[in-house]
Image (cartoon, rainbow, N blue to C red; front, side, top):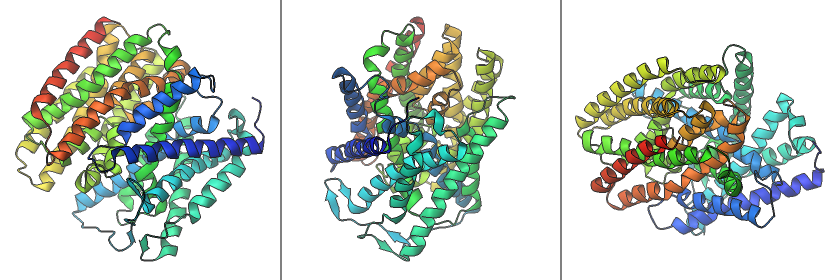
Length: 509
């Protein structure tokens, strides 16, 4: 593949930085002063801009003309490593019943520099962009894979620029107990993430001949394990930045790439049924889960609903909104726990699906028993939540059980239903990951776990179903305005409509 000149590569780097950071900042400005998440705007903004670039002949489908934006859309694992690490910390603290506070170590600034964004948050957005690309480039360099990328000859220079600026970039308006210690923590965190990426890729390659487990599976184990081992680690600038802006930036890049496929994708045979299930699944799995938590678990509070559904579906949008603090401090602190708890379920998810991918057909004899096990955990969780009566420990326990159970039911229920209806495993992988907004499956499909076609189209199908997210975030935003309570009647109606849509989508296969 023809290599870019260093100057052209730097121009692409600056263009991607401007395009993606502006998208995030504009989204935050639009929702400023409301209870709604900025991801609500990023969804529509990214898809529309991606389609417009292709429509005006400024780019080709897939945005091959903008390689840095494409690279940003592929940094999913890096953003998740930060969430998995913090989740491991929270689980350790919960089990050991330790109280932990970072108060005084780092205090962000409250001075607003752009409507809806203060100086510390702006610094986080800039640093997160630099870290995602710098860490990805460093990982590619260390793995010797530069020949497979357009910017291969420029990776060293761009990685140096990204990581060096991210290292020294600190908000002068924030308050630090020790600024040097805080900056050093950021360096250690960045190096650790690169090591986790390197080891997880190596492990994935080692077991490839036995079973095709994706890199994210091992990255999840390693980062969660580190969090459990280091519960007292006070977060530095790398972790703080990735937790706040990592997922929004990754999704902004993914939506741009996905939107660029919008005009051509509908002509691909069989893709219509993938998209229909994706839309219907978005409504059913989200509002079906909310209906269970609200009507059966009697847990109709945003502190339960947001982290519970973020973990129960490994939901990329809610994960980003929770960790960014859009739904309050309690939801933000609980979300990493709920994101990590389905880790036990991911062992089955990735092993069984990897074996099925190699076999070419879903191993239904394994998925059906797991669906029953997941359902049992859901029943247990609803019983726990119903008896919680506002007790924090009981609520967290119930949400942990729900996250694990609903995750298993949703993932294997989707694959089993689609496979029985006659959809190919390759298309089912896109449908399931899109219908759940499942970050782990998205990353696995993107890595090629289910074939090259699914890997190239997943950004489109995943992004398209995000058009349902204005409804999802609208409901959560409305709940925030109603003292944390979701409108029960609307949830019930949407869950019913989602079920009808899922059943109808199987008829179209």
